[in-house]
Length: 248
Image (cartoon, rainbow, N blue to C red; front, side, top):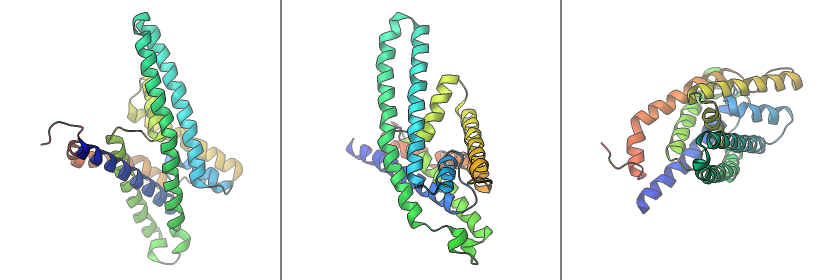
């Protein structure tokens, strides 16, 4: 049991670190950032604010929205189920809301990782101007590495089913309330974030900020990386973490 808990915690923390590193590399490639992060990135770039702090504020908004959506969903189900299920729904709602609130300290730690990596990783477009790392080809390779790290990190942390990243939690909450497929909900939410980022950027900077090739590749590539990584490693990972009874 202790060994399984150790592996579960190890995979979860390692996943968060890889996710933060992937996001930081994505932003430093100078080719565009992932849709959800584009909101905090554009605001921090336009007004010269701290990227990690703006991401934490964004995640805090996501958590509040999750709590509202979970409350509405619980009331709808309680009404449909009648008085007999009302008590069970209230208990379940409290547990769900506690998990939502726990995303806030997770977000604080995660965004400190973002600040740490962002402060240590230079922007390749300017720091390596005239050399291969600063060229379009070099930055594209950095971007692809960022997408792989983001996908692997997201898969590892999500598979452990401890506390979700608010960016994933809000998508799941919307899907639960609307009945949409998670994949379709993710695409719609990404489009919403991209639209918001473009609107704010054009209004206050006169040009798109944070939106580019990297945004498109992140939308397409992260999900594919998660799928491939899970196909290759998920069964073994869940077995070591004590989350499955058999491993073949």
